[in-house]
Image (cartoon, rainbow, N blue to C red):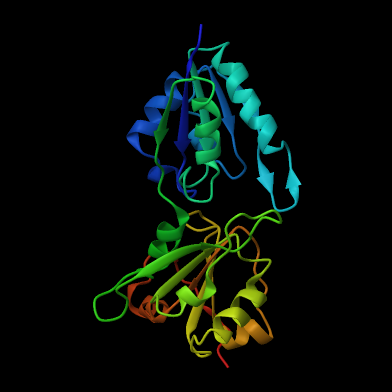
Length: 253
């Protein structure tokens, strides 16, 4: 017997942002291999006899290496008819879902990709920051803030100069270096930025600053956080809706 593997995006944290298709896959799963930061309410959709396996990763702390996760997906596909690989956000947005899909395809394991809502757009949206806005931002890019040591593809920093809105994922640790590089390529040092901690959850928090301040004296930020740069950050003053009775932390100089 060879089962089917569902590579499922669980969204950014708010369980209400889980897609209907993802819920259906979770409900019929015989085993779920789930990442860090998956809301327990999402896991509660699983049937009682579903086997749960935690394979989460944090910066520099991996419960399980990617090669082992790949091997487990193959192992369980031969044991169960329905295997769910549950990943935060979207599997194909820095989620290594592509690597898992290729591994399965090379072994003739049937699989399906169920997209999830990525934090790169949802965390800003919950913060009142549209990644695009008529007359303000006609383009946006999502960039990794944590390049692998054995990287085969590097960030093309020069190409980021003309993009209106930049969203860095996994960029908290390197936030000062990122800000310095953006200023070096010609981005405005006074350009507003925001760090969004634990976006869309009840611990959602926004820290505002500027590129210059981040490059010189970066604010304290606790990961996971989205790092967004662009004039659209200013729209938050009018559009902010999710946070209740919050006094924004401002590091403007």
